[in-house]
Amino acid sequence: MSKNYVFQKISTPFDQLLAKGVAAYEADKWEKHRRLINPAFHLEKLKHMVPSFYLSCADMLSKWDEKIAAKEGSCELDIWPCLQNMTSDAISRTAFGSNYEEGRKIFELQREQEEHLLQALQTLYIPGWRFLPTKRNRRMKEIVKEVESSILGIIKKRIQVIEAGESNSDDLLGILLESNFQEIKQNGTQSGMSLKEVIEECKLFYIAGQETTSSLLTWTMILLSKHSGWQARARDEVFQVLGTAGKPDFQHLNRLKIVNMIFHEVMRLYPPVVMLGRAIHKETLLGNVTLPAGFSSCCLQLQYTTIPKYGATMQKSSSPRGLVMEFPRQRTCSSRISRLAGGLGYASDRTLQC
Image (spheres, rainbow, N blue to C red):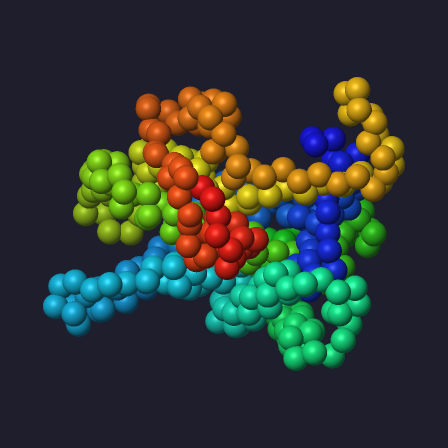
């Protein structure tokens, strides 16, 4: 499976309606896009994004405080939509910077597109049905046009700023455009990305950053509510590290060792991507088995945490200092919970045996 030139990614026509980008590419095209995107995720660049994350979190917590005050000290709160909105706001700020209001509208359309795609994936597949002008098919195509038009407008504004000689590379889009311009300037047009490809990478920022993060935070809160001892240790560490500092900076976050351990354990139990699919396009020898061209395989990541042999190994290797949270075995999860496990919601509205 690690030989990506043999076992290649599986894609469907529906994938193209949501986002392609580096996650869908192979071989040389993947290498080129990975190289151009890499500068946006260098550690020094990420440090400057901490204030944006703080603003998004502070906005969400202030809304929670208002609801609690209105209910005289306590209230029941559905945190899933709150965390979705918070992570969407955070990725909007970090992806588009000063244009984050426009970015938030784009990501709302992307979220709507996800819901349409999930509904399509859960219905009976009929070849050619996606070409029919049904209400859902028309809306999905409208969203693609709206999103691409909006992102293109933001990109053109940024290009004008860059061509005017003004620096504007504090967010993901600015860093990506600057990296792309430098590559084209040094090695020619063919070595860089087209506007269409830049748009696809911007759409992927949302898919890769928003859904996975909101799922991780939701599962973290669920597990901490079950393990009050670790909840208390994490709270004590936050107060000890931050104290009365108010706004956290990167150095503060780097010292939150227990919180980091908890996140790793949650990702072990509930990985943001629960399924990896691969296919081969020519006859391939795997050990003593010959696989025919067109063979496809699916690796269920979530299943490994429920298998004693693999689960015990991962607990030892990924849980430093003895942090092992209980995995709820032999329990039927509700449809909402099972949706969170998949990031993009492959198990949405279906029961999941944990």
